[in-house]
Image (cartoon, rainbow, N blue to C red):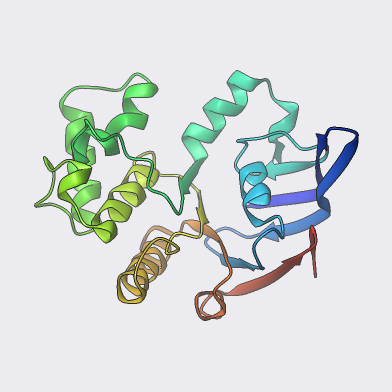
Length: 220
């Protein structure tokens, strides 16, 4: 379970304070698919970054399995994020000099896992997302949809309880985007992963079990 309570985020721009989030509350149960729908500039990406511990709120807290992640030290929060949270972004953020397999197992290397076990797990996850034949291909040798599948496999490599997706189809054509959404929903069913997806696409949102609308930094 992941929950936000009174989440606020503001930035100082010169003499002005820009309030991006203005007291957001939300709760996503285990294995639930939640869509956060809103226009550009509504605070969707900021909210997702705070839910995943990538940034710090101005006020409020984020609780994963009852633990306020912002009460932890930076190192403890990074460790929890590595174990419990996976991220899928609009832009794939793959390392161009690495193969698909190497990109996927990078989180394992970061936490100190290496060798044959990491290679096997990476291969297994790439098979799950339908890229078992692309293990040694570099990003430049893959289509946009295939690169996003590699990014999803990387997000899944540590068996996260929560998968946070920021416009995961925004850089894809409609047919490829549809395939990516079907893959994410299928992973939710098979792995019981809590899925939170932010999008401006109402067609994507309507397939979720729970829909939240965000506008001007508030959830309605």
